[in-house]
Structures are given as structure tokens and as C-alpha cells.
Length: 130
Image (cartoon, rainbow, N blue to C red; front, side, top):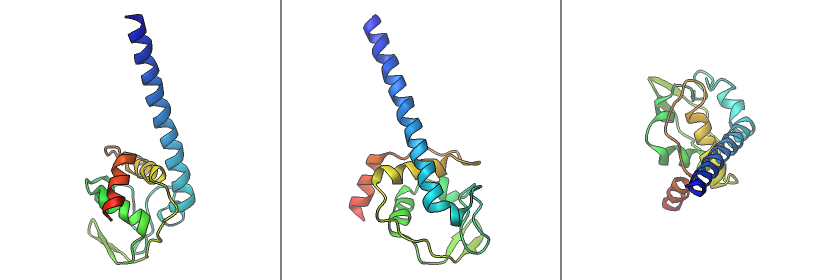
């Protein structure tokens, strides 16, 4: 019984540590790759860069679209929640699947956003489909 309790506690500590690491990685990627355009508050820039805070596309279920935009960029006018944004998003081919999952989790759960987590396995699978 005691062994099971210790194993459970170790697993919980491990999960908490992994989530904390994921948050640190996601915040670091956001600050180095995303902040200039999407701003510290996730509010974007009117008519240029789409906001991430409160955006239906960010907290929605189309993870494939988000993964592809982060990895390959996006060079079309974006319609988002009744507004249009025209600045192209640059591709990020050097980001690892871990970094993509981490930054998605960061933006999907920062500011007013509350969305389910994205796993590294999901990102890997979606990038294989291309």
C-alpha cells in the first residue's frame, strides 16, 4: 500500500514538473517568436496582426490549422471574429514539435483563454499529414 502511494505521489510530482517545464518553454517561444506581432497581452495589432486573446480560432478545436500556421506561416488575409488582419505570419520551420505544443498550450491558456492542452504526439501526427 505504501509503495503504491509513493509511486502515485512521484507520478503526480512528475506530471506537475512536466507541465511547469512546458509552460516555461511555451512562454519562452512566445516571447522570442510571437510577442512582437501579437503583443504581450495577446491583443495583436488592429488590421495587421490577429489577436490571440479571446480569439475563437485559438481556443477552438482546429489544432491542425494552428500547428500548420505556426510551422509553415500564413500569407493570406485572415478573417477572425468579424475583423480582418492582413500581415503575413512568418514560418517557423526550426521549432520542434515540443516547442510548437508548448507555445500552443501557452497561448491557449494565457490571458482570458482557457482551452484543452495540445500534446506533442498530436503535433507530430499533424505535421506528418502536412
